[in-house]
Length: 418
Image (cartoon, rainbow, N blue to C red; front, top):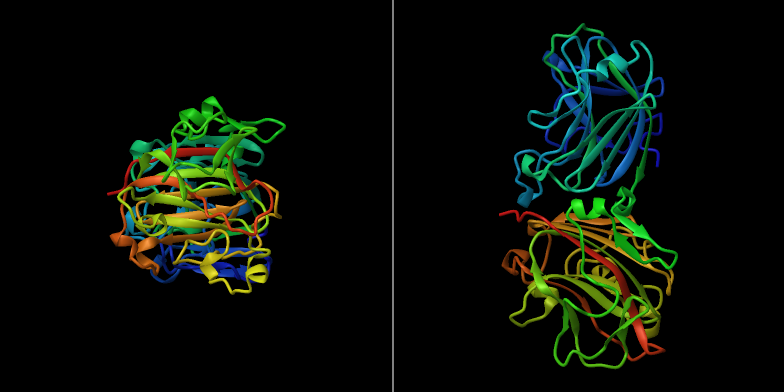
């Protein structure tokens, strides 16, 4: 997708990250142009939207000497990860005698690149490519088609935001020449499915297996494709079957939810699902085992036949009841992400501290701090650790023996945010 239309700063803002400032930003000759503001002020210009995994390409021109950079996963400053904050890394474009191009910086250097500056074309456009995937982030940086940085952030480096805005920088306060300027154009972004990071292999039937890279990154499977080991159905446990490497939710049966035997607090989760006409299900996260509705002891990401429900039932759904909605709280920002009935869909959920981000088929539905959204009971009063599960809410209108199927269920537990 094009992030810059070449004419206006539509889709860009100058606040909302950790490094807001008074740098001067304008559109000149089809470029986003940045200069120091009053009293040598620096600052960033950010995308309005947040991105997690992506491939970003852009052209940059920096007068010499001047200091700029590309910032990733930018969120408001002064907040902990639990409050919706956290650090984000910078790809340095510090084009000065003692600067670095292609270093990784976040409140100090994580990775030094002393040779990157030698590859920068002075007084010319340079083509840059930044690839950001995973959590911890794996950052890859190319300049003019040459790989100059390949770095994976270790978990020990501290609390990094799992997603955020992309920022372009004027550093400021460098006493640079008065006419110093940085320009950007041809800014194109492609969002990536985490599977594209090489964490999974896929066969012709769509079944996925973890690669060594996936295991090294902390992912593990929650479903072995053969039986329900590691899972338990509530009540009498009836209503489930394993068919062709998939968990089928049957019309006949009495159990209300299928639960992991293990509890989770902070994690990344991805799974595939498909549904039949008039299906009603959901994905439970951090739900409690001491009784009560799992949608409200923890939370639920809705799964529903959006295409037929209102017509068949002659009802009107609340906005949060459509597929992807955070049940009882947040409506999905996009309603066309659900694929036609009978086709496979992929949920990606990142639940760290109080922040939850949900994507359906690669499209961001919401990225919110649960302490800042409505809910009854309030999210602060819900359990912090609980099971992951799927709701079995079989309506009478379903035709056939099953109405929902799940496969390729993977989780990556994260260090808990206190």
